[in-house]
Image (cartoon, rainbow over the protein chains, first blue to last red):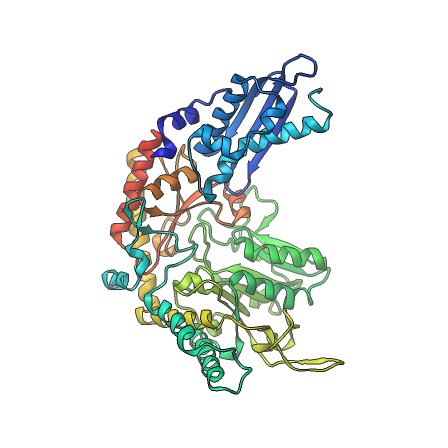
Length: 134
Length: 423
């Protein structure tokens, strides 16, 4: 089954960056009430003024394999590529589909989107506060 | 069992393949497939008899009107009602909203109580919440027992906002809205018992019955039952989407304000005022879904030929077999959770479960890869999900064309899901 290939199952069973951060700058909770998918994301930014680069991400997920695996793969990339919060917030759904390597129908779209929504909301909140200063 | 080999020949869609596998359609609680006979009745209408109803003197209008009213009579007969009391709506949801806007909103006030239950589909919940909010009447929810049946007496521990029925029925109650069968657990509700209690404790209260999951699967007689309003949707009983029924007692209809206003629901309109049309037309504004009604009429005939009792027995057997196989799986793997009544006869054709450690959506996705179509999620029943503490579940639901072989396919697909997720 493509959608549940080894890589995805691996990220589902062993999500990277799992767990709440002890020290964090921002957090966001997102849920799909209609199916019980939930994710809580914690972000720690690098302490370099005005850079806003993501230092660490921690997340707690309770939900389907797609939402957990997508979160794991997404956040791993954000940290690996040393993205700023702004850049992270600009990742599109299409980018995410490519990253995870699946094409989902309308029924599972919101599963995949969940961690991305959390990330985008954090980026929006930070932008409102006037850039990356927290 | 029904003669499924013959019946399946009537359903063109059952020939389809899903992801290369034969279609095993087990999502009938969501919607049902259509036999050629129903599709032909709709096509025939459009190919030979289409015109706007009740407005023309010409032959085509007469034919269309005759077909529409014949469908109405056929549907009325099926539920033991008079034709003039049957209003065609778009679906159960619209019917329930009609009852809420036209009956309840104009009559309930502060100090009154409305009753519904924690197991209702959102369509039989949100309209009543709206009425309570707008009128100041109090909405009280009836609790369920551990098998998902309405709790008549004796409160269960730990449910503060939920009550047993006996506790909430009193002279303040003006409306009771319940379903005959849960779309999540399949539990058949003790409606006769509810009516008896209601007659004793609040005889003036109006009872609205959501028959969406029961009318397609078992016989019903509204006169015998003693309810005041009944809704059901055509598409859940071999009929097309876009047509449903709200049945109500004549004396209620006559006193009610119209719901939608416009063409056809009036006898006369002039510059200063209007007079409403007689029932049921008073509640059917604008051009109706004539083709849909004709399709529903034909669907009712199809079901009647099979026999509602035989349909119920057929589903009971399928459910019993499913329960047996899943109990075996449960013994073998300790990975299966089953929800709802233990006895197959207490639940009609709906089987809800989870594989422990696998999210319902993931289970449903693997099942789909094997051609098995089921539903996953909360099934439009948020309060029930909260009450049962199940975030999401997998639901298989049966109808006249499903077979024991298809239940086997479901079981094999579940085994595949267990393998994929290595639980």
